[in-house]
Image (tube, rainbow, N blue to C red):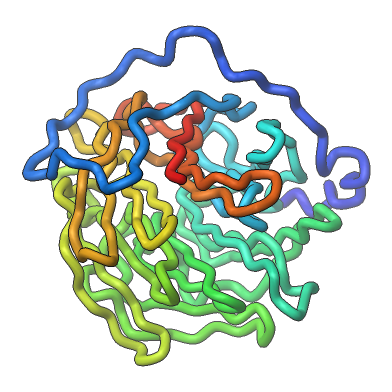
Length: 343
């Protein structure tokens, strides 16, 4: 482990890295899957194109990503940088290198807690992932000091699931223990610092995405342990009743996806199958209960970090950020980052 590095955090925890968007040609687009049954129209107010933003300093894929204070995105671990932690500031367009994760992982799950009364419990949380085998170890980054601390492990090892923060609770859904899909839903309360097991996800899967949508935990897409077993399932967990509800499936089944929520919509991005990666961007609107097609991702990829930022003085507009990922199926990596302005 790298806990000894904490003694040096004052010097290295936040080294600014000036990175300008590349003016070169983006990586060659790999084979992609044509959309099946996806509506061609975009929702009202949807933008027409993506834009490049500063490349992440460390090319990688199968990352975890978390948004803190609505304008800073933490990208954690992954192939090509299992212990690497880098932060993108959407207000300045700059990347910072932060203290390494004490226990390097790929396929981890991450979410952030902020704006709560007990500020000592705020921070960026990282759960599980693969460190050779699936692990239950979990960590918290204090964003003020830049220091990592280990917290109570998950009840059992898990990787390739998804994490969602709602108030002081962090929900872990889906994933695999390395050989089988896992269905129990876990919740970690940052104030009591303990775990509970909740109602299982109706459709167990790994390599899924999840978002918080008006107090619900919504799990979307993923696969059943195989690139040939992709899913489009959209299921939402209701914390007040400890029950799941099934909503309309995404038009394009896929695993290795990312997703973010903004203004009552879920933006589903990227993914992979055995023959290539996905360019499709599909948008679920909870007001209509239906899906629509968004602007295609310029560089299709999987294992990517996806985050919604905006609504702050520094970043008044909403944007969906797509960070790093693999342009071809498997362990490929890229530094490419792109943004879709949504408001």
